Length: 421
Ligand SMILES: Nc1ncnc2c1ncn2[C@@H]1O[C@H](COP(=O)(O)OP(=O)(O)OP(=O)(O)O)[C@@H](O)[C@H]1O
Ligand SMILES: [Mg+2]
Image (cartoon, rainbow, N blue to C red; front, side):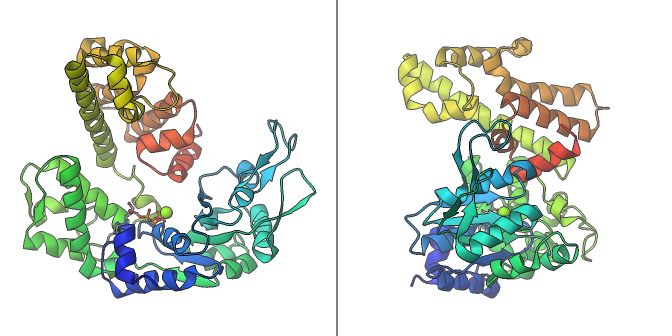
């Protein structure tokens, strides 16, 4: 059996907190069995690595591992996503389709945000868990599958059961073994190690010297509540790494990046929202800046390669991933168009040119200009604008838009509902 330390190294898990070690140990112990596992813990504590460990250490490791974010799939399609559907089962079902439970036969399904599953889907899930049986939407044929379930939640399941949003029988079935990940504020010893790790990662990524904390800044880091846990710490490390010229960070500077630091009392924050990537005005702006910087670096690289090589097709071949990253999957542009885009970008006056291939990069510049010109535009309007543009760019494909915006599909789905898009 691999040791806890070896697993941490293999899966990039930092920290040495006894509760974290115990959680990993439990994952190792339970991996070889087919027992259902429920991973619990606040948002951003690192729940997603546990199902991966379990799958990789199990006899299913050569089978499929499918992670499903139950909160990101619209209620109307989740049954079909999970269990498949028959041709003609509903409008638009032009083909019979296999669901995840059929595809992952012999493997593992990670049901993230399981507390968000609609009640009707919970009934179907209970049946699969009990005897491996499921029925495609619109079919009457019972099918069998052999899937191991690992679920995760950051909501209080007992509350959900009390409010009749979650079936008690399903909860007990899912949580045969519960693995709880501690909140960052309970892992004081790990906070500074994690910060140093992130700071050094971002220094590499942005090609800048690593930021260092003074003693008073470290003390503040340890005292802070970290409602968004490791995700929030990572964001703070990224923001500081990019924005601070002076690479030695004292408490006063650090404080600017920590909301509600005035008090060490439990912060009055809705934790599920607080670590959303759009939780503060600053974050929206940083996101735009990071994206622009990253796009610029990619474009610089491409331009340099073009100048050096002189052969468009060679550069295209060698830089497929970069071109894809900058211009996305679903544009049907060819590389010549892409090169024209570079020219458009380098001359700001031309930024109004509205060629379809150039919209992704251009829009970010438009957005930056709008910030200057229309100060009255509210923060929400800006956020709405960002989301709308991203969705338009990706023809309504939420997955791509979420990736572009740097938020989870679930968060994007919530925003879409919130703004009634
Ligand atoms: N111990 C760790 N070492 C290094 N990075 C970590 C660790 N734990 C979490 N992270 C990083 O923190 C971020 C948040 O982790 P993760 O997505 O697993 O959170 P989560 O518990 O699933 O949160 P949510 O409930 O919001 O989905 C990820 O970028 C992850 O890589
Ligand atoms: Mg998660």
